[in-house]
Structures are given as structure tokens and as C-alpha cells.
Length: 194
Image 1: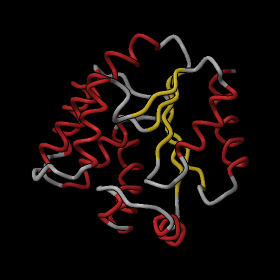
Image 2: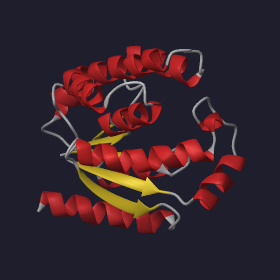
Image 3: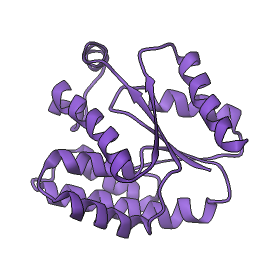
Image 4: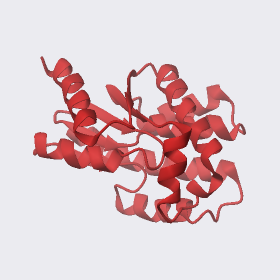
């Protein structure tokens, strides 16, 4: 079982993945970007906001994704894999940029992933008010500096990307308490295991 926890920055992905790892101690816990040696370097480049070209940024993410699938996902498909972000984020961010056609985005991501997608997407959704509060409580990285409207557009694009990739989407209200969110994810994971 390969699942992904998706959501915009501050939605609580890391918190939920940490909680899930205690219920699935043998699971492969991974992330995009940055789960491989090359991926760590790519992540640093992207978060530094140094790229001038949105196409270059998109291609960097694709390079990370290809390496991640090859090194981490494909060899462990017989295990439980829980990923912080995935191809869903990649497609969503590219859709928002508007510089590459939807068809090209989908084809290039299929090429990078060998068509290996998560079975389920758990989307932790935030309201505008909650997002702005959470952003005010932290130092912002290059993506977060683009502002709340940009991030909320990404949130909508994550839903669209899940549909375009034909991946089951479970939307969860990320303003709920941590334990409630964890229970909702676990209940949906159990559905898959039964």
C-alpha cells in the first residue's frame, strides 16, 4: 500500500506522518522532494527560490520524483509506504504555474514515475483564516512567501491533480485536533487493508 499525505504548507502533514509511523512501525516513511541524496540537493535549490524559470523549477521537481520512484518507491511497493507529498503535489504546482500544458504535465509526470502513483491521497485542507494564522507563527520559506492566496490555489489544484491522475482522494478538515485527523486517516487505511 502506497499512500500520500498532501496539503499546503502548515497543514500538518509532518505531524500526521509522525503519528502514522507509530501505528505502522515497519512502513517506509518518505517525502517529496528530498528523500534521496540528489533529492536533498534539489530541495535546497527549489526552497531557496533561486530559479528564475518556472519550467526549470518544474524540471527539478521531476528529476527528484524520478530518483525517488527509482530508489525508494519501486523497490518497496510490497510494503506500506507513507509519503509526505507525491506526484499529486508535482502536478498541482505545475498546473498553478500555467506555463506548461495539462497534457504535458501529465505525460512528463508519468514518464518520471513510470506510472507508479499512490493508491490513496489524504488531503489535509485548511481554511484561509487558519492558514494565515499558521503562517504568521513561523519563518517562511520561498514557497510560503508567495502568500496565502497562492497556497489556497495550490490546495484547489491538489484536488484537481488527484482527479486528473485518477487517484482516490480523501479530504480531511485540517483544523480538527491532531488525534481526530489521525483516526480518520487510519480508518481509511484500514478500508484498504481489509
